[in-house]
Length: 152
Image 1 (cartoon, one colour):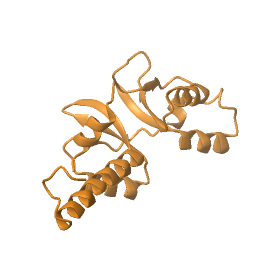
Image 2 (image 1 turned 180 degrees about the horizontal axis):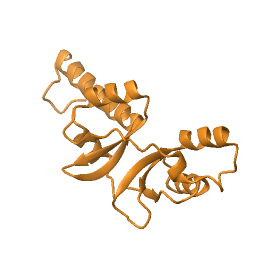
Image 3 (image 1 turned 90 degrees about the horizontal axis):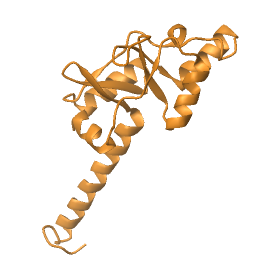
């Protein structure tokens, strides 16, 4: 399975991002508003020049490490700058291996030179589960003699 399939199932309406000069409190509020776990980070003053990624886990680490309130910490000080990325044509098995190796739970996905979405390990697991359910149903229908019929 390709990441393009997961992107199409997610029905992404755009990439949610935050500026590198925002505070960690701003990040937390945006994560809460959109019920998500990670944001792409943009260069200040730009909506489409991505310079990093930040997650809820990054917020927790920074608050513990810097021992400052989240309103004082900036995204630029906390974000992961060297993003690991994937393309929509990448195989899910390959991407899950990369994510596991680097201990990341979200990966930006490109089509050409444009980021088109952010896929989480949860998105991948959900889609792999759905695909397995379909396979099991087809095998069950085949072995039960109902393969190709309308009987379920």
